[in-house]
Length: 301
Image (cartoon, rainbow, N blue to C red; front, top):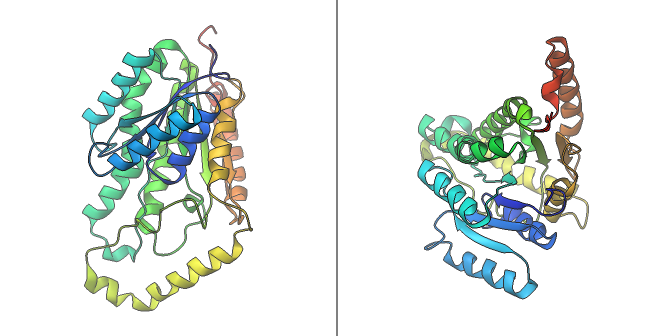
């Protein structure tokens, strides 16, 4: 069965937001979808029950699974469980993200390291669990959920911007390295959304209250930024648009999926930056004689 018709898919960070919407949308498209989250038997147990009820009500193959991207053992166990049940893992959607808000100086290096660990290294742990199977079968899709903040960074999101930029770098280089094994990469880059996610509601903040207070004149701008973002979002735009784009890309025939896709209702300028970046990277790899790494090489090649 080809990936373009039905796939076994792992979606990380699927308890809420983009991940939850994406898992449901992919299941409705006919795929077998594992919606992963941490604390599936404790804090997120109600969300697991919701997923199971949703799958039954809509007659879709949607399953909850425990996965903590900060734990190698958890990543390995989740992938092993999927392979044991399905015999395949065709697509990994790297969606886990944690937003933090505050003056960059106020975050300790340890706090910033945790944000990078969740947003970037977590995806790498999942890849280390999933890629041996994908390399073995000579096919697969790594789909990364990035952020326009990597290209157009706003104030007071420093650790998040750094973490998403790190993830983007890992995704870009990994794409070249797995292409010879027939593995595709797509990076979906969402902009700001006023509904459908719990990013700001669940955002972390620096523990250094003294330094936060010293930046009061800057922090006061945050509410203005949020209000202005809301004003720019076209009516009817919500996070479902990101899930729909992910499902569209997964449903495309292998070898035809876009390397990047920007889903940005407010058009913050990231698309223009990305277009230039993609072209320059393509030109540089061509100069190096490595243009074959820009596209997956089928296992039969």
